Length: 181
Image (cartoon, rainbow, N blue to C red; front, side, top):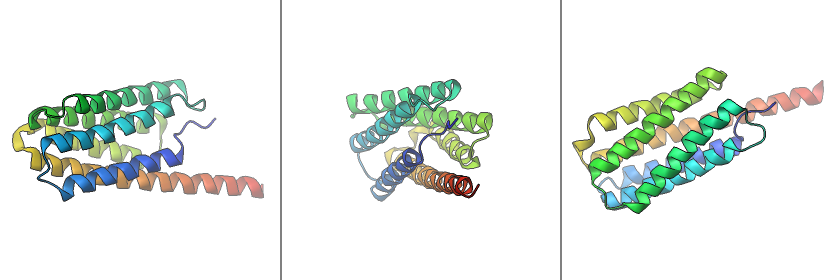
């Protein structure tokens, strides 16, 4: 039984993360309002993607719960960013840091529990590190937070794209082996 998210969904998450990261790094003096809205879009789309993945027929119950929890957390974080875009850099930093920490721990847990692609564990570790750094020093200002978040998103997005490419190649190899059997 196939239990992984579709490759295109992982690739889409990677592309969106890279776009978000580049925007955050390119405009480090972005206002808290613009950063909140950029983060809101990213977290909302990522959360919806995870929720869609949670309700696929091919997803086993344990992973369904993890995808659903991460998806709900992403949607809630995105909606909160839209409802309070004028939040201070401190509040936004805490929301972003908590989101990165929770999704990172869940990615690591899924990777270890399911023996999934090791890149998922690396993505989770990068997310945990970014979350901890942000939560330890939320007072460093919007520009530094934007740069940390941007670099994290670029790294995580690149790793997601690499994981999607690896999964695509592995599935192609399996399909090719099946044709020759």
